Image (cartoon, rainbow, N blue to C red):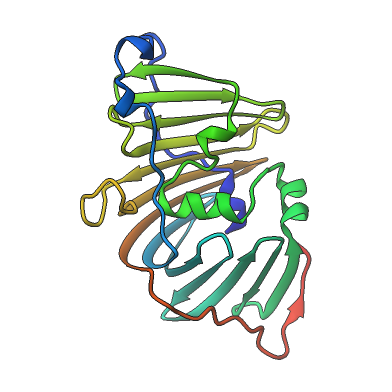
Length: 244
């Protein structure tokens, strides 16, 4: 699941020709996006996964303790996998192959040409920009048909954020690694309570890495905010360790 962070979702292209300077159209109230915030959240989802034209459907439970840890649990009638993401480490096991792994955020970023940690993965799952806009010093803002487009450029990455016209909702975001052309495209649809500060009801994602192409459709079916819950993770006996 960590490798989901090189995705591409939307099949619509943004028309660069139909842009206007933001200064002529935006008010001060609409210039700042307010990210979704919470202490902890548990999300129940249905996931349709396609990897190189092979399909899989499973139930996913995401437990997030804000800025501390994320536990992803997949089920197909019975529990299939668990992945625990902490600030520096990532752990996981697969019941089908009876295998488990232990690695670090740094090792995963080096392997997949990423720059993502716990907070960035958390943002992807709840519909916030991967990186805070305050962290991006070199970007261009413009008006497009779908809303307000931010495009940024760093030494290693190109990326974009597309918000609605009032800067209340993130519609789409992308990250492209310049050297490898690995990419992540994510789009967000709907809200549970139709509030601007609620998580999306649907996340669509496309991940391109080398010759691999991953498509995901995540339909969030329920969420519980700011309730105490456990993060049960323990590798069953007899599993073999693998390197990812």
